[in-house]
Amino acid sequence: MRRRTAAPAALALLAALTLGGCSDDAREPGADHRGHGSSSADAPADDAEANEADVMFATMMIPHHEQAIEMSDLVLAKDAIDPEVRALAEEIEQAQAPEIEQLRGWLADWDAPTADASHGGGHGAGMMDEQDMAALEDAEGDRASRLFLEQMIEHHEGAIDMARSEVADGRHPDAVGLAGSIVATQLLEIERMNDLLEQS
Image (tube, rainbow, N blue to C red; front, side, top):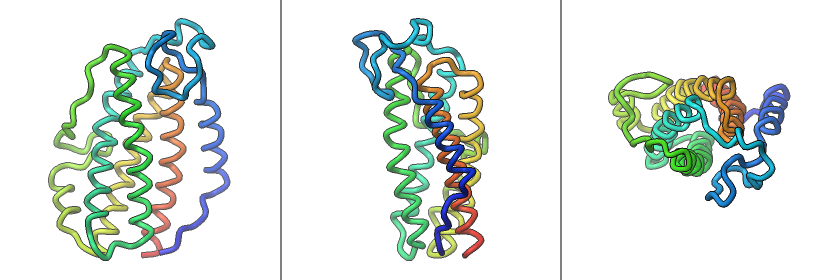
């Protein structure tokens, strides 16, 4: 499989959303900053308050990211996986593990319950069910590579829907910024995964 360069339009979207989402840290002075790192004194006081959409975004995205890492772990533990698929799985892990910690930090800052590790039992928000995960665990070689791509595309589409809701309805600037970054990054990864499927 060959990796095709991402489309210029998608890269432009990534730049726009990332720049749009990079705002000053909106938490109280002296708080443990887990966001993008600016002083909370630079932001209006009302921006420091997370709304229901922010809490829902963080609460739902944590188990969603956890399952993406679990899927990546399954593939990385196998032999004869396409190198491009292996590289993608590693990148997903490296990107999403720190985001989980950031999301957990925000929930703590907002005095909101921390999401548990349960993945539920269905396909809500692109989540894989137990049968899907078992199929990925049992697959080998090219079949495993292809199944991972097919499942992760669906998984990413669910994350993008969740992140777009946060961009539209969230208040906390760092959470909205992360959501915009997730949309842009995962759109590019979906394009990349579709290319790999076409070439397989």
